[in-house]
Image 1 (cartoon, rainbow, N blue to C red):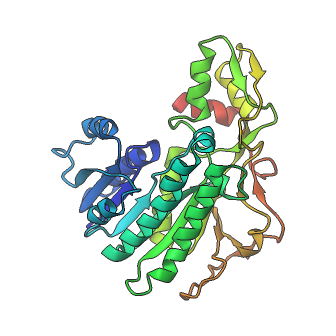
Image 2: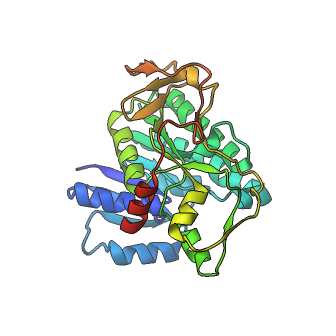
Length: 323
């Protein structure tokens, strides 16, 4: 309440759910700016969240590649949630400079605009692909993470703080496996990249809550990683369409067989809390205090195939039914 917030990539699945959550939980939010480059998606979103009903909402056309536009959008903004990114792995492999311009140079623009405008807190959304990256998308997001954390060095003058929230696929969002499998089931066959493939299971609500908790607890420099269950991709396909055959098509260029959200090398800097991990910064000369909690065993990676938590068949069925 009484805060001004800007969401880059605000018309995406997570941005839309963030908007719904913020307007629902905090009716006295001062201003909520939806920043994105797609005018059609903004028009569609405005049908669900019209300014006439939600006085705080603003729709701002812009691209994170445009530093001057970002600086204008961030005037009098107190919190920034940076969700804009070029996310498709194959598209990034075939168009590498476009991914670099959006994910790396765009992150630099976010940092500079936030510091120049005296924004209080910036939370950037990362991905499992940034931990030990195997594709260009992951490499650009690792660079983005590093830029955000390093922003804490640059902001000592204005005391703008930067942190990162890292998680994998959001189930039920646009482009995730559930709507994809439902669509392919209508054709009579479901393509599977590899029957051994595992992923972390995260819902939109969990993603939103993690962002909100990061804003509440961050001191600057953290990478927050949620403790969430794993699942086998083939299990989801079989539950969605039990009588539809599946066939393997092979892993796409740059794709991993299993997700990894904390690398073995980062384990020595990771603190374990009740429901999340905190990867602390490599160097933190701005006076970072390591949170209280147990240390992750050195050399232990947080991977979807070696995870302690797994979704049961009943859990998957209930989620799909509610979705």
